[in-house]
Image (cartoon, rainbow, N blue to C red):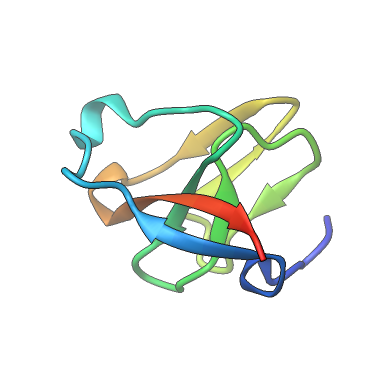
Length: 79
């Protein structure tokens, strides 16, 4: 698993209004920011990815969110 700081590659903007934690959006430009450890993970991770505290993980295009109330949905644009 690569530990890449996504903020070095993308500018992130919060999705407004904030989506319902029970139905988090997925797609190429949606990312999840863990509110506990501040790590950002793609909503459709094709390589193995996880946040430091374990709240967010995923691979093969399938995200795994342990506590969706501790996630902020953001959109990313290349710098």
